[in-house]
Length: 231
Image 1 (cartoon, rainbow, N blue to C red):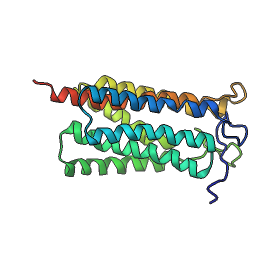
Image 2: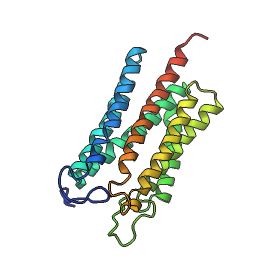
Image 3: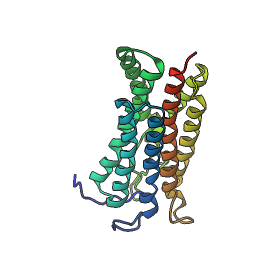
């Protein structure tokens, strides 16, 4: 594989220039904003433990990696985009189960192992082609959004469990699941709307995902605040 081979799978990109996707590139500021939001609240509430700091930094890295992909648009930049996303998903799932469930690390890892097996099965079942190159013989019918089915399932699972167990952050969890559902629609429609909207809708995916990640961080922080409150 040539790591410098150009990748063009978004409506806005019409060339190989660094700023060929200005909306897609600059909209990644939403992830940085989510990280700053998390940092401000965690610092104010004295919750800046190493685990929380790592989660906040990982949220910011998503924005940096995605910015690189939507400017350089090469295979190495694609990895810089994908790795921070799935690293954050894996980390926040493990951390949330451990912190909110109040379980030991051994039990947490067993639960995560089961969840990973389920989500891996969903990924295999729904992902299809990860790239949605319109010139491909059989482009992904959902523009590659199938790969995010495990994340969608995880968010809705947390939201439902949050209401079932009466978590203080249950509304934040529900909001994050709803926002991510909307953002997936924006990502899916990007190439379909090129003729009538040349800018595309991928930048909306970034904006809503930044909001979603901000809500996920706040869900965790709100839960931790509630857990330490006297009862």
